[in-house]
Image (cartoon, rainbow over all chains, first blue to last red; front, side, top):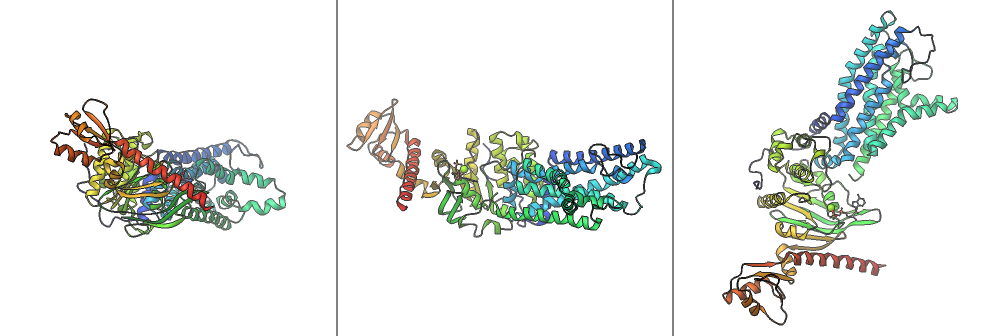
Length: 275
Length: 306
Ligand SMILES: Nc1ncnc2c1ncn2[C@@H]1O[C@H](COP(=O)(O)OP(=O)(O)OP(=O)(O)O)[C@@H](O)[C@H]1O
Ligand SMILES: [Mg+2]
């Protein structure tokens, strides 16, 4: 028979909750789940492969202005848009990553361990978002930069330079946009508590709603469309602008507002609801 | 120390916990008993602040759980439903929980050894058997070396060896002066572990008694007596209110006499006893009668109130 009780213990008397400790706990959770690592790797691979692929497509063909982009492709077939064109698919992967991190705790019951350890609750969700945003930025800033440079190398003479007006902002903005979509997924995962429901909402918010809005009468869609998360992001992920989009600064502000509202709602409900 | 005062929880129109008031004291194992759906798990979730009470309060070591800055050092809990991400290894799960209080690998390895999971600590918790899952949950409960240990049906899925281990662990923890609060719907299990019992039925408090007192009430049932001089003993114990049935040779099932009375009389007559047991069935029956009565009682008063 095993001995009854712990003979010695290494629990110090200052063992208590601090916010940095909760962030560390969330980092351990993040790195110890295969699904998070797979989604993160898939985001990088898809983003880079598509960006380089679209750049090759643009370099090879003599594209007439107004040629439709390949399926799932960039919204504009120019050197910048092509090299960053992987963002459309990558956003779904990184959104899934956020959903899995948050809703996965509800699906498995882990949330009860998390909230019993940190009964004030908010540091758990805040820590999760800090870790998620931090990891996504740390991985995707280099990914977007290298993919952009690789794309321009493929394009050769047609390519543009990172020092051209607004290009660096668009490239880094793409990494920022993907981090924002990850956080959005985590907020929806925490709000809806089921992976399936939250994934559906992410897809709806990023793809379906913009499609539906574009079918509305033009006077309506013109007013709504720029404020949707994907188009607000597009405003700072492109250069030169287009009449349909907000200015880069306004786009960033609108996307931030989406995050604040969804994350705020997730925090409030996390506090109020039974676990 | 756990102090519940008028604690209630309503889910829709289901009153899961109904004005429970009780105190769980340090130094003994307190059993939390009740049939399925009595509200044991709900009460435990409210103690941890996972579910908010509809009414009433519950304090742990003098404060609401959420007010503690070191909750894992105050209460260690094993919850009924597995509270572990299936995709994470046992060790990483414990490391993540421990990290919230600044505890590290050393403490995690200690509790892993304590529950005997060392060999499988690197494996995904999703692949664990029920018993291994319970051990992991218990490891999590002990992480913070807590003053209160609260376990919801810890023997679920454990093999006989594991059950014996749990009993020893619980008694040891209580002997160290901790508050130990353990739920079960099996009286027989609690009879072997707990010193004090809190019995609930349909969310209401039915009894808050020591095990000794409960056994005394229950043992009006049958006492199993084994003696090499069974025939002489049968004659000695016979009386108007006493029924004696004999199954196997040398064994008497006596009802109408308390075990103390049987033992005293046998000793006075110089008869040897090899066994003197208030039968488990009688404890279990007493428990069932008690909770059944409560259920009927609740039904009757509810009807009368309207
Ligand atoms: N989250 C919930 N939503 C709705 N009803 C609930 C919820 N949790 C518990 N209940 C109901 O409350 C009652 C008490 O349930 P609880 O799980 O606390 O009982 P228990 O004593 O732990 O039972 P068991 O011995 O089966 O584990 C049950 O009728 C149950 O159906
Ligand atoms: Mg239960």
